[in-house]
Amino acid sequence: MKFKRLKKLTELYGISGFEEPISEFIENEIKNIVDEYWKDEVGNLIAHKKGKKSNRGRLMLLAHMDEVGLMVKKINKDGTLAITNIGGVDPRVVMGKKVKIGEELKDGIIGYKAIHEQKREELLKTPKYDKLCVYAGHEKEDDAKSEFNVGDPIFFDTQYKEIGNYAIGKAFDDRNGCEVLIKIIEYLQENPVDYDVFFAWVVQEEVGLRGSGVAASQIEPDAAIVFEGTTAGDNPELAESRWAAKIGQGPVLTYAHRGLVPDRKIFDVIKEAAKKHNIPHQFKGRTAGGTDAARLARTLRGIPAGVISTSARYIHSPMCVMSLNDFNNTIKLGQTLITEGKVLSK
Image (cartoon, rainbow, N blue to C red; front, side):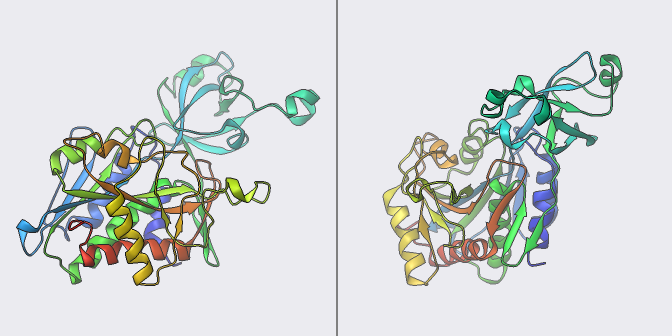
């Protein structure tokens, strides 16, 4: 296996608001190789690698820890659990999937009536969440209430696997970004730079970009790079004009997305670094979706930021697919940008 730590990161359970297991794991990985680190009031994990010359500026690297998932909104009379989505999750991708429920990670399955029970017109419609529920072994409301509560998190139960040059698993958005940051810290151990580098693993991106502004307010960076997971969309049933990216074509560089046109000078620095060092790369073909860069643009006096992503098919679902070559090149591009330091000297 090429990425054992990425396997561990993706298999951890942590929807928005329940990121503690991911934060604890990352803390154990980085605590002996950074100059300082801390957790703030909202749950962000922030680390600092001091530069050789502290007056050369502050660069912030950011990834979010939370994944999309579900939550218990009601316990039904038949002992099933009514659910709502946390983050953007298409109800069509969750039917029949195994889940873990609550902080004790009890087993469950998301049910929907069998195809034999559906009318023809129903087959062509997307069921709403109020028509879906989780079965967790109970037949009565009181029995279920003895084990579960409204507000319990529900996580997709997916194992990470590598098949050839591809990986399948959950939470590639954005545990791959979390791993990129750790890889850069390890790189800086052998390749120190003049300027200060801050790393922020932030919370609740999927429900409104909640953690990044809080982290940036503490760091007060001069510039930032957001490492993300993004949709590929290169499905054969879609016209190529609708593809956001294509797996296997390298890191995805974002020139614009919902709510933001990223800093043009930083975008050019990232693009030119990829060209100069022959790192395969592509540009995001659609502007749907947003990142924490939009929050940074509204924080303090406005923090200029660039966005580098690894694309995955079937993102925001219990099972995603990404290219390990793309992921390797995202790491390489991040390390290259850190070495050159031109993001700060834009």
